[in-house]
Length: 152
Image 1: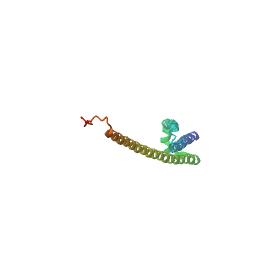
Image 2: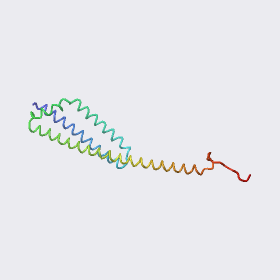
Image 3: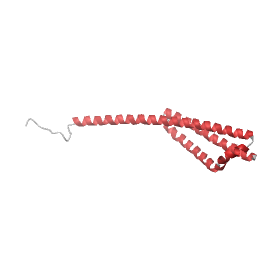
Image 4: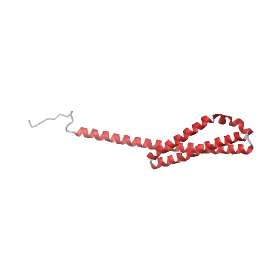
């Protein structure tokens, strides 16, 4: 296998690994924003993540052939180059596992916060209904009340 092809694989895997590293860093910033309730910063982080995911998708589309050929081509690579590629892939897998963990944690945290907010809104809503019902039963202008003047 030519040195250029080996470099192409290593370059491809290094680029993908860097995208995964960037996504993991952004995911950690996202978790911090969620924890600190800085939701206005969260939109910017999500936008950055979307751009990186778009770049990663484009890389996968344009280098699809290389990715598919890797399993066959790896045996033909120089052992040092193959080891460098495999190390890069292993680190990428580790970054992806960490990224998945961060994303799952953020999702769980947001879901818990959403459910808590829903319960609070329900309690406030029920409280206002009780208040309105109580207020309506004591209202002198209630249209279902009958007013009798016993002094006549």
